Each structure stands twice: as C-alpha cells, then as structure tokens.
Image (cartoon, rainbow, N blue to C red; front, side):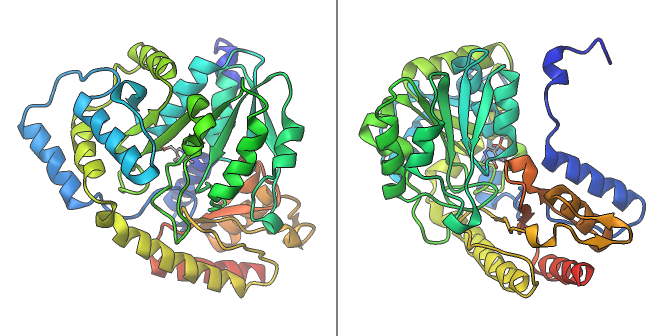
Length: 394
Ligand code: PMP
C-alpha cells in the first residue's frame, strides 16, 4: 500500500461509484435496494445505432483507428456542432475519446501545470475536482444555492479569479442540479472573462439534448470566447450509450493536437466499432432520441410531485439532465435509533439503510445541503422509492 504513488493516494474515489458499490453489497445480503444513484439512462441503445455497429463488425472494422478518431466521424461531429450549436469547427479541431470523461481528462492534462487553479461553479460533476487533483492543480468552488436556481453570478466569478486561475469548468445542463444557463446568463459571465484573456473555459454540454424546453447555448458561440473554449460532448447520455465510451471535443487546433498527442500515449484512440456507430447516431436527426427525453420529462414531473409531499424536502425545478438535487438540511440535527443526521452524507446513508434507496450525497458535488436523486429509473421504481423515503422520514 505504501508503495503506491502519491498521485493515486491523493486521488479521491468516485462518490457515485462508491454508493453504487455499497448498494450492490446490501443487495448481496438480500436487501431490496432501489438504485437512484447512478447517472445512466435505463433505456437500451436505439436499434438504428446498434445496426450501424453490427454493420461495422461485418465490414471488418477491426484495426486501430486514427488516434483522434475516423475522419468521417470528425466530419459528422463538425456537422453536429453546426446543426445543434451554431459552432464552426473543422475536423482538425475535433478529438474523439473514450467517453467525455477522457475528453475532459485530456484537456486538463494538456493545459494544467502543478499549482494552477481551476474554478468550479458548484454544484459540479464529481470527477472535475479529481481530474484537477491528478494534474496537481488546485480547485476553487464558487457556491450557488437552490434559491438562485444553482447558478453563479458574474460578481461571484469576478471575485473568485486570482492570478493562478487557469481554467473554469461550466456544465449546462448541469449534473447534479439540472440547471441550464441561458444565453444571456452565459454572456454576462463571458463579459467578466473578457478581462482575463489567459483563462480557458471548458464547456461540458453532455446533457444538451436532455432538456425540457430551455435551449442549450454553447459557450463557444460567444465570438470572443471561441478561441479559448473547449466544447465537450459525448454520446453516453442522450443516446443511451454509456458503455460504448464515445466522447469528443471541439477546441482550438493547438489544444486538439495536444489532446491527440496525450491519448496517443494512453489509449491509441477509442473503439473502432463504437466510432462507426457514433457516425450514425450524430448524423441522424435528434428527433429520433426525443422519445427518451419525453419519458425523462414525465419522470421529472412525477418525482417532483411526489417529493413535494414530503415535508422538509426543498426542490427547484430542474430544466434538464435526469437528476433532482433537493436541499435536505431541514433534517439535520434529527436523531433516529441513536444516530443523528448532521450532514447530507448522513442523510444519504440514512435513506440507504432505512428506506433501502440509494442516492448520492451533495458533498461529493460541492454542496453539503443537498442530495442527488437520479430519476433515470422506471416509474414504478420512482413511486416505490419515494414512498419508502417518505415512510423512513415520517
Ligand atoms: N460530464 C458530466 C457532467 C457527466 O455527468 C458525465 C457522466 N456521468 C460525463 C461528463 C462523462 O461522460 P462519459 O460517460 O461520456 O465519459
């Protein structure tokens, strides 16, 4: 154990995966656990994408692909960026990776030096801070709360910037809050960043299609931000393709080149079959996956209505993604069977043990008053889970 590197010792484990593992353990003991902790659609990959993958196998796509992805996939990504985001990228600005997670890790590895600082509007996706830690960079959280719909203000951004600030990570629609920044709000944040030309922006738009009305606005669409924004996206969420592992970036060419160099030494590019299927997924109209979005919207409305009946749960209305992020601080200080709930972690553990429902503590996302509940689950599971939560809290 002591022989392990300082690097791995300083790396926190993923809280969402830890909760899923704990739920599995309890299931193995015979407990009927409802898992609402993972960020994974419960749909199968649509048939038109599966067929493209089968075709690729039969067409003998079995060799190493170019490190940054097949040229025709990169062209499909450029067309998608133009069609959905109004962004002009050329194929030499695109890098396809093994999931958006690797895309983000690549960008961090090629831009951050030890001691650099990144800004994380909180709540934020758990891996951002861990990825920064791996680069020996530090991170600073910019807090938000349910009262302002989990959005940060330009004043907060300005106050958080220091000479060490190298990057800021935006994520809209947001995991875990479901919040979507409007064009106007993004432009106001960009006004602040205009004054600091050495700060780079990573815009993680992986939930862009899972939006219940508000249109996704890409940060790179602000003209004077384009040259220092890295737009991250992927197929996992909207196309129900988590296990296929396809993510991609659109970025200034010099950053794309560096990311290609990085993954050339680490993965040699991602799976060739998944890349061929991704061409079909991205080229077809987003209308073809709309049925999943509609289903998620119904589930969001259902879970909000059910949670609204539990005294002490404070929810906002998430506009996208498939999570609710209720403030549960009203329960802090309460004791049951000799155990006191003092934190969101205690609360999530209480729900696991007393309601047999797995959620994730907000602490992992930089907010210690909330828990994340994923509603990427069946209607029956949602109804049963909230019933159990209500009973356990009564
Ligand atoms: N960004 C966010 C905000 C996410 O929630 C996730 C997945 N949980 C990712 C990136 C990573 O996606 P992928 O599965 O493509 O690596």
